[in-house]
Length: 379
Image 1 (cartoon, rainbow, N blue to C red):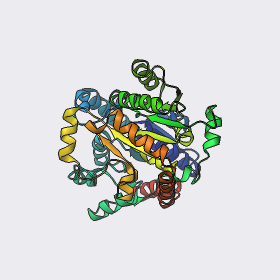
Image 2: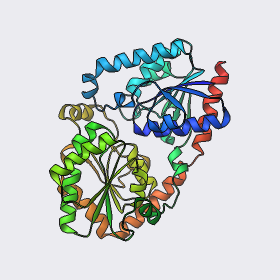
Image 3: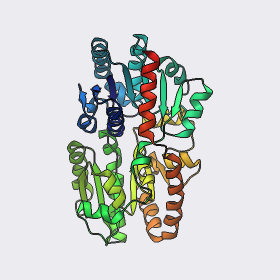
């Protein structure tokens, strides 16, 4: 069986790798080609293009890259027409993938989209394009599937693979030993995001907040992990500029170990907020973007929260700081509040554990079966 696949960022790369592994267990002769990152390549995907070409965010920034993105989508479309897969799987990156999926489906190639776009939150009119572009939508979160059912789009809630992968009771000491750091210190993790633009907007407030924390609690230590050497170098340059004396341990591709090892996490909005929840860590969620992008987002976004823990709970479990509220003083205040009130953290851990249980659904098996069913129905 041949699988065409496109993922556009680090979180999609990890999900794609798990998907490929689950499919290969059922189909050992599986061929996978398209576009992915290091995790998908290690799982056996032939990646035709660098995943960094899709690592853009916001409303305005992608417009600046539009000519390259159009060329990339055209080249992928032509490749898949020439080397027709039995099914195409678009992983997240909806603004890029849905256009590609529509053309491939019109050409007779079955299409599965994995990871729902936030159509329930903003730009809800996209549901009409999605209905034309996909044979099946696979959602990670239960409330997403209800939205598609309401609009008569074929959908299956498969659960989140990370909820199956991450233990219900993560081992903090084992993670610290794996990172070769002090087992007894108190650590705050700085996770500013996987995209270049996220580093640009989030590095300064996170580092300056950490600097303030360290001034108030000199025994504090800090951790950070980045998806690539390039992101590490970009963040390290800000570190040298804003907090060169901060006791900060740098890691690459060790975000899960860093989350498990930390006592508090500063995290940029996105999949990492869900991962932090699954590791049962108190967090401060923050997000900044260009002023024009922010003004557009205010007009278009229809949900009260940006962080997945708060969205899943439908209430404010953890602080969310957006745009002008993302400042060192506020971040520092929330982080120290966690450290000074362990009873709040304990309550949060209990809530996160129940949420974790609700997301366990043997996702890898569900995903593989759903994709194979789609292929068989179309063959």
